[in-house]
Each structure stands twice: as C-alpha cells, then as structure tokens.
Length: 559
Image (cartoon, rainbow, N blue to C red; front, side, top):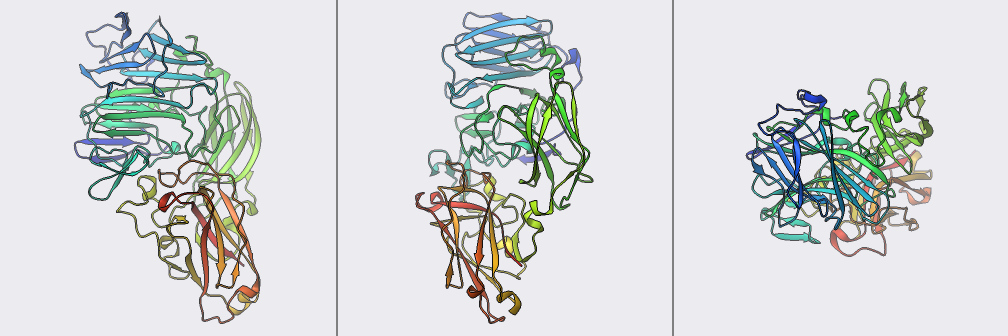
C-alpha cells in the first residue's frame, strides 16, 4: 500500500493512504482502547438495538430496517443528516433484524429479501465492523453510506460543495464562485491508492476503512465515490458496485469487513487495513458466506522479467466470483496475493494500468500457488515498438498529458484547467504536456500534430497508433494526414456507457486504434511539417464536455 499522505485544510487534516501506528490489542482487537465507565454490552430500547462497545462509542441499529441510526463518540452524535440514516443504498425497508453476543463480540444481523447485512462490535474498540452479502440484483447497487452531521468537520475539498451553488452538470457537479468545481464524484483516488477515507479535526477522526473489494467490480484502478460534504452534512462510502463507468459485471456474495473507525484524530490503525485485517473472532459467528482464513489460498510469483523499470507493475487475479491484486516488487517483480478464495482465476500483469500479460492460475484452500518467473513478451508491451515519434507513454493512463492529473478531481470546465485546444509540435520537448488528455467532438476535435520526416521515412508507409483508456458516447479517433489522406471511421470498441471523463475517471477498457498510412500521404519536402489531424467521430453524445469523447493513452508513428 502507499505511504500516508496528509493534506492540511483549514482546521481539519484529511488523511488517506497507508500505514499508521497500530493501537494496542486489548481482547485481540486491532484498535482496542481502555474501556470507559460504561460496560460492553447491548440493550433494546423498543425500536433499536443499542450497542455499547465499552470504549467511547455507542451505536444504534433500527430493529425495523437495519439502518444505523446513531453513532455517539465521546458523547457527541456524529450520525445523520437531512433526516436520513446510514445504510445500504438509500435504505433497505422492512427487514428482519436480530442481535447476539458471543464472548467479546456483538453481532447485529439484518435480512432484507436475499440480502444480508451485518454490524459487529468488539469489546473495548471504537469500531463498527460491517459485512454485506448481496446475492442478486434485487438491490440495484452495492453501496454503504455513513451519513455524518453537518458542521463537525471542515468542508472544502474536491468532493465538497457547500460553497458551490452553481450546477455545472446534472445535479451533482458544482462550480464555486472562484471557478473551481466540486463533486462527490471527484475522489482523486483509485481503489488501490487508499486504505481508508474520512476526516479529522485533530482531536477526533472518523473514517471508513475499506474492505479488500474481493466482491467489487472494476479491479485495482477503479474510481468511484469515496466521500462528500455539503451544507446538509457529509457522507463516507464503501462502494462495491455503483453502475458508473463499470468495466465488469457485478459480483455477488459476502463482502467485508469494512470498518467505521473513530480515533483521537490520527489515522486508523494499520491493523484494520484490508491487507492486514484478520478476523478469527468472526469465524464462528454464522455470517452468511463467510470464509475463514483457513479456507483461502495464496498466489506468489518469484519475479517478472521484461518489465520497464520506469513504471510500477501490478498483478491482478479475477474471475466472475472474486478479484484481488498486489504490487510487484520494483527490484525483481516478486509478488504475493493472499486471502484468495479457491477457484481458477485469470492472472493479469499490468504495466501501470495497461495489461501486458495474462495466464490462468488455480487456487486451493490453505495452499500456495507458486509461479516461476513470468516473462512479459516484448511484443505485448506497445512501448517496445520502434517509433519515429511518440507522444505519451504506453501505460494505460493519460498521465503526463495536459490536465490529466487535475481531471481526477475536477470537471473539465474548471478554471484551473489549461486550454483544451492548441496544437502540438513533435520535437518541441512539450509534446505530451501540451497534448490534452481528453478529446471531445464538440470541444477540441481536429487537434493538429506537426512533425517532420526524413526522405527515407517519407518514402515508406507507416502505422500510426492511438491508444485510449475509455470513451464516452462511442467517441473514437479518425485521422487526416496533410489534408490529403483520411482514415476510415473505426468501429467503437466496448466501453462503459455512463459518464466518465466529467466525473473524475478515465478508466474504461484500454484499446489501440491502428491506421495504415500510405507513403503517398507524406510530404516529400523534408524541411516542411507534416500535419496529423485527430478528429472525434461519433453520432452520439450531446454538446460541450458531454459530447462524444475519449481519453488518450499514447500516440505514435512507427518506423
């Protein structure tokens, strides 16, 4: 996992990322604290089960619908805004809710049709552990939202919009008076980039520590809502399937635990992080779909050769039932993916976010599948091809292109964005940084790349490649060379059908368009600039930044 990153904003520190000092382990809990005067236990007030963790946290669960209706930490209520509670989706409705205590663990079980949801408390801990078992599509998405009262934490991050009364797009993207944009969609982070999300005042921290996402969809590089805050209050999310910019079908089954964690202002304990958390205390609780550590396996690889040392490599495992991933060691490509459910998986090696190798692996309960050194074939990495010129890097992302980093936490209309128009000259040294990360039919279609060729190069046909990472409304590139030769309109590859480029995500399905340009298209004057015009073709989309568009990975002209 990544190292901690702290962003100081006003009176709050927003912390995301990796390791923090683990708390003491009273009763084997990862964030156990000395018990307060209140005793660990539960009661029934008639309409709620009231759970006292015996530390500084008391929470309530509705007996009628399984909503989390109260989170009182050190005497302060944190839960709820706008008359709404914390729950799955927008609330489940009439449910069967039961409670039980097994030693130092209290478990609240919620059944709503085929969906089962669980809250667990451990004696002496300021945590709530949650599991969700979604069996089918009877509940549309898989989202848990912790709703937080207004005014408890500072509010002006990219996902906040208290001071942004102007709607830019739909009803969920806003513009402040200074021209900056805000939206709950602007998470900035991929799943693999964070362990927890939340807020801190310096004296109190409230976080959701994510699960391992084994039943989520989209893989390690997926982006979705993480949190938001407005004048009404804030929300912290665990999203496993949201239906926006999804590249995979839903996965079903038990997901968790994910954890609501309170602290004295610091980061949550690293013992709660998905790579570290163990829950042997839950093995005998009867949670539907629960698989103990003994029923899981491991995949390890001694190394990966054929890597480009300029890029990080990730190894992913995926099948229709589960997904996992782990980082490959920079020195030799060693990797280890643990806690894997038994089954046969497609193993994918990613250079950055670009798949460069796949194979099949079988995982057994309690076993380790050890792989010999994986050799990535030279031809599998498009960056290995000899090129006359190249703009960007073949890594499956628009990284390095103009506005690329900003677009993970801002709308394309944001005042901080550099102009989306402007042409590019190969050999200027700014080819990549001057080329926009996104192209839209109604915004910057027809952008021009200027380049020179030697006499020998101009005498031959060449292949031009344009790699993309996603597309909106079937936007795809069509090219014209020197206003004399125009490519056919390529067929659209499979891409998500929802918004992407305007809600902080470039992650779709990587695809490479290839164009065979004849020698007759080139200028024979070696002192003159050839022109490549790139248009966005599509009959779909609307206008401006919601017109058909695409995100660029790399562009090159091969020798």
